[in-house]
Length: 266
Image (cartoon, rainbow, N blue to C red; front, side):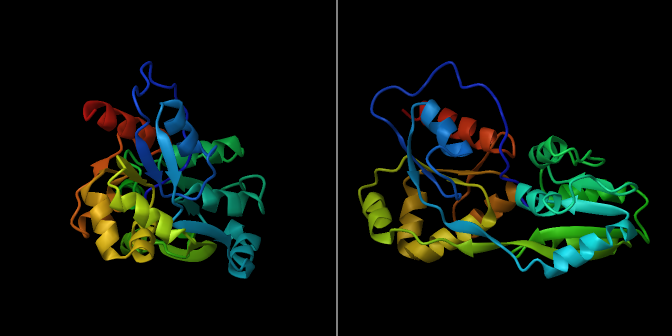
């Protein structure tokens, strides 16, 4: 799955000129959140349409797995939310446990929490992680995968095919958010939105559900559409819109790609 974790970088030397260009942010964050703040620093106007929210999962299965974490050879992290759920309970990486992260952004969060990372695929997606594991001796290894309630089967199925025993536990829940649908539809009806950003497949699914297919389709047809990575991009392609994939699978990559697209189109 694509990783929406925060990354760092400098603001472009040129900021948007003229009337502010309006960009929709569909991830759950405040106006001072990591993506929104970067877009605003670039001179863009941000509309917050959080399509999904992250909720605490029932912690029993996760805590049970972590109580016997020494039995695992690997632990796999696909998002910063999973990192938070685990490191809040286990402050220091257990001795002998190897760590894999889907993407540099998730790896950076782990390193900030003093969890060294042993494996990062070249691309920040689940298929690339499985491919990276294929070059390692994983047959017979036991792997813990703390995941979202909406985790796609790619990691679990791929590692199982390689001969690993994968224990997937729910680390957090991804749930629909409540939007002011009337206000969203009013913006869409005015064709006033220049770009819309998606940082997860769930955001695509839930925004379409909330707006309705007709309004969602109009939104995508009248704005630049930016996806954080190929997994999110495929959800959009299934709905008839080929997005621009961010230059890097990070919020910084989403912000820069959005800015540059709008600069070209001004």
